[in-house]
Picture 1 (tube, rainbow, N blue to C red):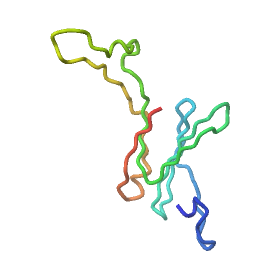
Picture 2 (tube, helix red, strand yellow):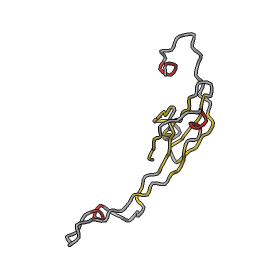
Picture 3 (cartoon, one colour):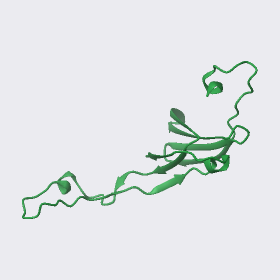
Picture 4 (tube, rainbow, N blue to C red):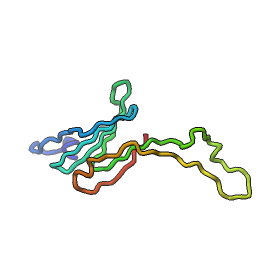
Length: 121
C-alpha cells in the first residue's frame, strides 16, 4: 500500500502491474494480475467511454465475481410487485436474475485466503 500511495521509503523496490488476463463486458474492462514475490493479487475494473478510461476501481487481495444485474422477466413492472387485496397474506415477488459473468482466478495463486466481493454491472 505504501508503494501505491507514494509513502514508501526510497530504498523500497517498485511495484509492477503485469496483467495476466484482460476481459471486457461492454464498457467495463477487467484487468487481473498478481505479484507472487509479495503475495499480492489485484483486479482493476475500468469503465471506458469513447476510448477514454473514465472510472477505475481497484481490488487488492480480493476474489472478485462480476454479475449482470437484471430481472429474469424483462416484461415485469413495478406493479408486478404490489399486493392485491386477497385472502392470502403473502405477496409473490419476482426474483432477480444475476448471472455470473466472470470470476477472478489469480487470488487463489498467491497462497492465502482472501475476501470475496461481487461487482454488479
